[in-house]
Length: 252
Image 1: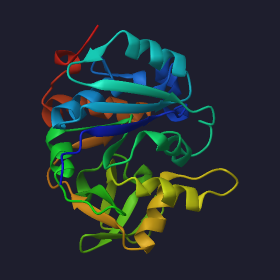
Image 2 (image 1 turned 90 degrees about the vertical axis):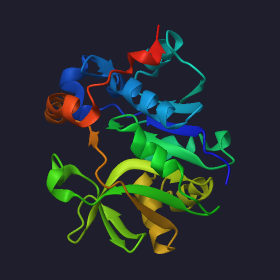
Image 3 (image 1 turned 180 degrees about the horizontal axis):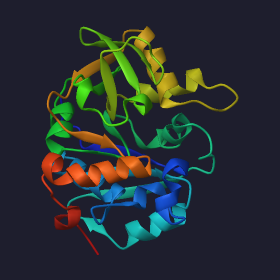
Image 4 (image 1 turned 135 degrees about the vertical axis):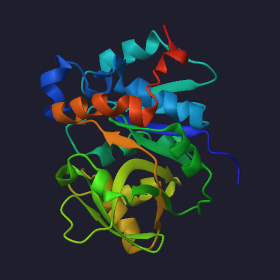
């Protein structure tokens, strides 16, 4: 299996829950410890081995484009795609990048920060041409805002159910996926009235036993989609993410 060096980052939503601290800007540019969320995500992915980024923007895409224009990450290329239907679910944003991928890729959310070692381990997993591997966290007692997290029920190394309101679950969705291009045809198949979410596609894959789980073990991650989550991650950043800033790779 050849190394996976491509990454799709979804950065299109308007971030209504975190709007009070976004100052009118897009959520991906909200700073965590002085560094934009998107910068944290890109730097960790680069350290894991990613060389090519495709970023789907929507709300205030002009600001993300300007931010990317003034920065670079050594050894990488960046393609920005604008999704005018960003008000729809995130599956539509993923489909906006369909033409960019014909081999496996890493799929990330612009508001989920993580340790590069976790992404690197995920990228090393063998993947079939018709499946997706979801990085899951089984250490449920350490999760901030468990009510808001997307729950997962696994049987062995397969995900059999996924959703925010599962009554029975044994893991959580970390927002990191190793995907085959088959993800796109799956999302197309579950669209209703031109709309679909990633979770819709993942449920479809789970029903086919084509959604595998990769347990991140003690790896740290955090979904930063509210002022409370932002406050929390800034408190634990030094402890869980090494206090490392992204400035060493991303520069003006």
